[in-house]
Image (tube, rainbow over all chains, first blue to last red; front, side):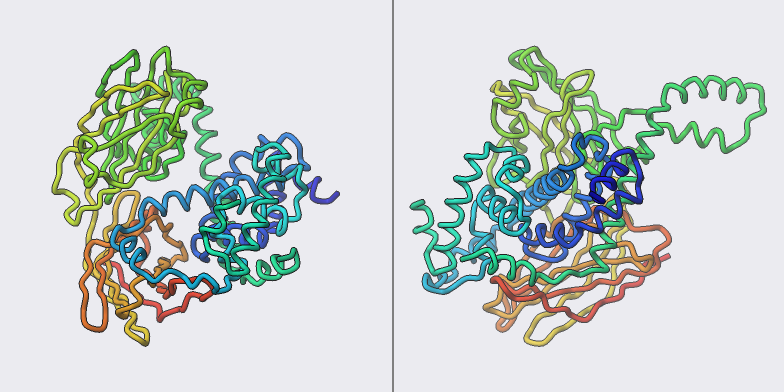
Length: 177
Length: 341
């Protein structure tokens, strides 16, 4: 497989091979980052930081066939780190105003993108990896560092929640699962 | 809900190809820089031997300037901030702008040493070392919180806690090290001169380890700027000042939003004339005024990039991001601000 050769070269320190690999994966990286951070600038920052971290630690990749899994894991950690950082900076004033806003109409339909942001971290990651990145349960388990059965449970519950959100459920209903 | 629908919606996310490739290039560039520094470090022993040889040369009067420059560039204190991944501290460390500290506190068999500190822009950074028989990788991992310690400032008074970035404890030859960046939210950044920091648990051990970090802000060059972008329906942004620090850039500006749209946001992207994008960190709302038709916010935004000395102007691209999903950011007219020489 052509990619495997490139990964092997990159692990040995071939910077051009690394760049080609990343550019081949760039759209997937960007869209995955976007699914977490929901805006262009932050998604670009997440990609930049991911590329940097991958560049300095690629020699640690033991199995070239897991390069993509490894890269995705870095991306997800980076996106969550950014989200956590931003949460800490939420202005108190804005938070107060949000609580005064009218609650969303419970029958309003949401799109998948918005619905994904309402899932918890593990459910969201499981759905993105399974549906968008087309990873097997085994690869998702490796990426998330969780047992395969846990991943299956995440997926099952996430699908139920997602369906409920998209079809007009409220957040209270989601908690029942 | 099905796979096709999810895929279709995700594939609708537009790819800003040029900017994406530019981000990748910057990531690689940063990685190359770090690898180069590591290579320099791995030659440290050799460097020490060379220093002796160079001293002999200096003594013999045969030395010329470039060699002494090389000696000056050798890192004097270990690259703590590089190890724990805090970029502001790392940049200051490279430029020898950190305050080396040696404050110690012991409690319940754990000794904490505050090893360095800095006050750059609105960021107060500290690094510290934790040692003790009970401090181990296992005890850190099994005890909460995730980073391995709990910390508070101003004796834990809730209203006075600053937001922060805390790194997890990392093992070194001399103990476990970590770092914290605290973000000063005050309008007047220099109104306090000491930051009281107290650790309340370390690797699951409860106790009190208190420090007083002297705050001496690294001088920055602050200058007033002019520039405004006004969009329809009451959205506008007015640039007020830029503060060029040793490792950061603070930008002050005023945003106006229509009443009823307070949750919308005007997001800035800043480039210099050399094409460098300043890395965004966070924006703080310093004050809010409610008008009849518009609401005004004074904002201070931290960028964790140093302004290039050779940059002559900045281009600021504001975008209106409306609250709620599905709406695309609306580009406003870009603003150019000239930098003083």
